[in-house]
Image 1: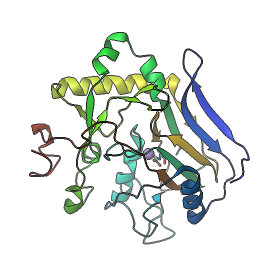
Image 2: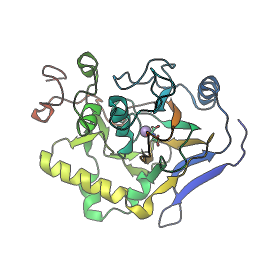
Image 3: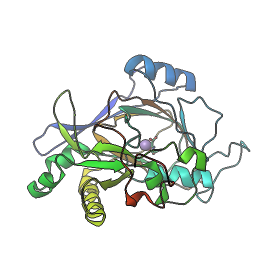
Image 4: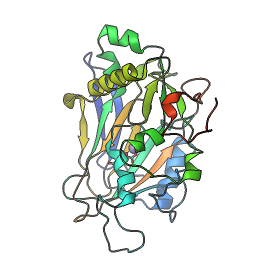
Amino acid sequence: MSMTGFRRWPLKNTAGRISGVVLVFHDQRLTDESQMAFSERLFGPLESTLKSSGKEDRLHPKLVDLSNIDPDHDTKLMGWDDRRMIYQSGNQLWHTDSSFKPVPAMASLLSGREVPPSGGETEFVSMRHAYATLPEATRRQADGRVVVHSILYSRSTIAKGLFDPEHERELLPVRQALVRVNPVNGRKGIYIGSHAWYIEGMDPAESRRLLDELLAHTTRPECVFQHHWRQWDLVMWDNRCVHHRGRPWDATAYKRVMRRTTIAGDRPTAEPPLATRTPVWDGIIAQGVGIA
Ligand code: OGA
Ligand code: MN
């Protein structure tokens, strides 16, 4: 990969230290094969994509396909009312990739194959800056807590029935540390996002309030880095220390075709990684699923 137009976004925290990692490489004319090959060669094993009724199976399972081109009619664009686009609109909620899996993703590489002239930006915030600027009392409330994450929960906030019932049963809620510590440098970040459902051992309403407050703090407008895409940009981020979200665009007028490779993580953030069923699950997770 050439390093043309390399730009690093080191969000500085109040002490002037680098606090989140997003890398932007311009002019990377990748194919699906070259993207998978170099991602794996440089950074390690790739994650496989989630199957969902909103996605096509025409691509390699190690590629995430974000596209508004109708897979059944190559020239037709799908609008935001299309089920497959409703599923994809989940990416417009702040999140970190695969936090709903027992071993969440380490990094993601997103390639802009076709990008709209306006809208469709991707935004990033630093989890570490968020933790460092938390009021002392909130930090004490957060330290040592475990959050249950589920993609069935996050997608349920958008629409019902986005997954096939058989597939749903495989998507078990998982436990993640609320304050995620990087084992290499000991730095802490607030690990939440759209899949973060509730904090274990806390009253559900109180837990929702705290998660909402933490997300609002983490995503304060002055902390957001917005990437405006050029065709053939490759953007890479560290899912262990940044949250991100996509922004809407006029999907019936403009194509937006992106491909993501996802570098697998190496360990869970909490032990044991699977959550235990509670009454909060009723209505979201099928009866009989999960550890009683
Ligand atoms: C992703 C993602 C947002 C976007 O690829 O993981 O969330 O802007 N993308 O497409
Ligand atoms: Mn994402």
